[in-house]
Amino acid sequence: MEKCTIRTHVLTALTEQDRTTKARLDALLLADLTATDEYQSACTLATYMALPHEFDTSLVIRRALADGKRVLIPRTRKTDRSMQMCAYDPENLTRTSFGLLEPSLDAPAVPLNEIDLIHVPAVAVNTGGYRIGYGAGYYDRFLASYTGSTLITAYRDIQLVEFSPEDFDVPAMRLLMR
Ligand SMILES: Nc1nc2c(c(=O)[nH]1)N(C=O)[C@@H](CNc1ccc(C(=O)N[C@@H](CCC(=O)O)C(=O)O)cc1)CN2
Ligand SMILES: Nc1ncnc2c1ncn2[C@@H]1O[C@H](COP(=O)(O)OP(=O)(O)OP(=O)(O)O)[C@@H](O)[C@H]1O
Image 1 (tube, helix red, strand yellow):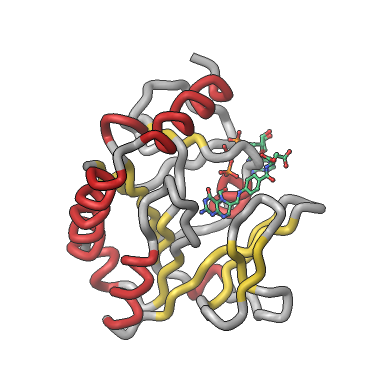
Image 2 (tube, rainbow, N blue to C red):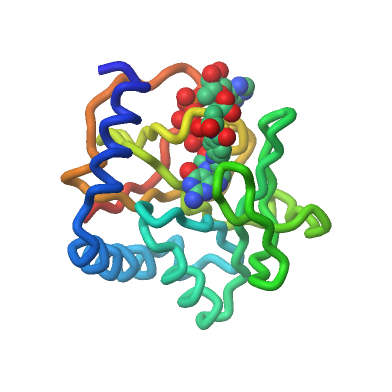
């Protein structure tokens, strides 16, 4: 199947997912994520501000802050399709035209080498940890120069699909699925 076709099918299934099932899987994925060595040893970790059909990252944000970690979230720039990671500050967020909450423009970007772990969003994944996102290539470009740990959380029944990665695709080091 073509990437674009997979994206459409999986997004439909994600939005139709039963909310009670989702909440149960989210709790399991949170436990899986926080049990990893990468999470345990991370001082600074990046996650993202989830849309309603995505894994509920507010659980990760809350837990990581309680665990004394520095939490970062992405800010995208449409003009050159670049992305930066900035400290999560609930008082300083801006909604993008795509509907995502992002750090406002005045928030300083954190250098890549200060990030220990990146929790990468995905629409679909394959068993190799390769992902299909919303199709702008933000993470592929960002991860190309990143050397720390990466992980993806995904719903196995909905998001696991076989597809062939392209040359620029960067796989996540760890894939947690429920
Ligand atoms: N919650 C969450 N935040 C995330 C991501 C994600 O997958 N989930 N991203 C994962 O990468 C980045 C944002 N990715 C985006 C990808 C595409 C478009 C977008 O505007 N898409 C247009 C058409 C694409 C184009 O040509 O620009 C659209 O669909 O209207 C916006 C954000 C960073 N933040
Ligand atoms: N390292 C890179 N440098 C320049 N362009 C890139 C790089 N990686 C990917 N791209 C471009 O980004 C575009 C989108 O890639 P792809 O369809 O894999 O996005 P995606 O992974 O679904 O999106 P996202 O990362 O935003 O969730 C591709 O057309 C590709 O040419």
